[in-house]
Length: 439
Ligand code: ASP
Ligand code: MG
Image 1 (cartoon, rainbow, N blue to C red):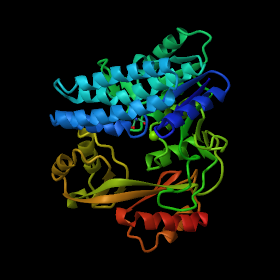
Image 2: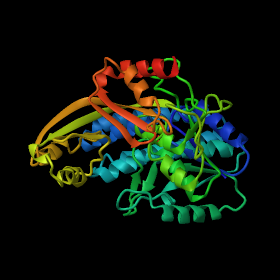
Image 3: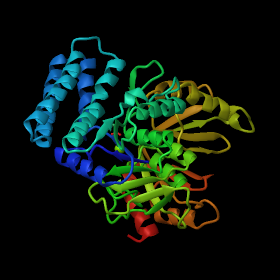
C-alpha cells in the first residue's frame, strides 16, 4: 500500500486537480491519497477568521464571497456535465454556508479551527467527486474520523491506527482512498489541525498506521535541493538522503517538508519519497535508512530567529545555572534551537517569540540578558560531517567576511549550524554553494 500526498500547488487549480487524479490512477496497487487545501485557501480562511475575531463581519463576508467565487470557477472547470456540476455547486453551497454561519456566533480559537479545516474538506470533496465522475472508484476516508492528537498536541498513534483500520475495513476490495491532510481532532473531540504545512505529517502518520510500503510526498519541485533555490541559482536535487539528513534539513529551514514528517517514518522504517507533480518522471528524492555519499550534502536556512544571551558572573564554577535557564524555556513551552556556552554566559536561539518578554523577564533573575532579532540559522547537513571531516573548515572558509554570531558543531554528527544576521543570508548561501558544490 502506498501513500500519495499532494500539496497545495499540486491541487491548486482545476487543471492541476485533474492531473493529480490521472497520476494517482496510473499508480498500481492500493493507495491513500492525502490532499492539502488548494494553494492560498488556508491563508484566505485564516484571513476570514481574523476578521471574525476582530468582529469585522463585513470584511469577513467580502472575503468569503471572493473565496466562494473562486471555488465556483474551479467547479465549473472541473465538471462539464450538468449533473456533476450541480452536485459540485451544491457541495460548495454547503461548505460556504457553514463558513458563513460563523459570522453570527461567538468567535474563538475553536471556531477558527473549524473554518481553517474547510480548505482540506473542500479540496478532497471536489477531488472525490471528480474521480467518481471519471470512472475511478474513489472512497473518502474522513480524517476527522481517525486522525487525532492528545492533550500534549502529539498524534495519538494507537487511536489513529485503530480507527483508520476500522474505516478502511468498511470498504473491502477498494483500492483508491482519499483523505484530508492537516486536519484532525484533539483530545476533546474538537476539530483541530497539525499546524501549518501539516499535511506532510498527516501522510507520514497515515503511512505508519497502515504500514505503507512508501510515503510519497508530491510537490512542485523535484526533491530536496542542495541549497535554497529561491536564493541560489543552479541548485540540484539530491537523489538519496538518510532519515537523519532529511530531518535536519526540514527542521533547519528546507521548506519542502514539514519538520515532523520524518520521525514517524524513520521509526517505522518506511521510505519517504519526494516527487514532482509537474515532472512525475523525475526521480525526486528518496529518504531511507541508507547512508550514501560523503561530506556536506545540502545547506538549509531558517529565518526569524532570535538569539538570547544570558551573562552571569555567578555562573563561574557554579552548577545549576543551566538548569535554571532551561527551566524558563520549559515553563513558557518555547523550544530552543541552538545553544553555545562560555564560562560566564550562555547564548540560545528560539524561533517562537510569542512569550519572549516573559522569558526575558524571568531570565533576568539569573543574569543580564541581551536579545538579537532578525537572525538566520544556516545549517550544513551530511551524514558524519562532524566527525573528523573537512566540513567545518570548508564552511568557515566559505563564510569568511560574514559576521557569525553563534556556531554549533558536534551536537549532531550530521549538522554544522551557524547563526548570522538575516541580512547576510543570501550572501552566505551563495558563498557556501560556490565553495562546497562548485556552483
Ligand atoms: N493547508 C495547510 C497549510 O496551508 C496544510 C498543508 O498544506 O500542509 O498549512
Ligand atoms: Mg507543504
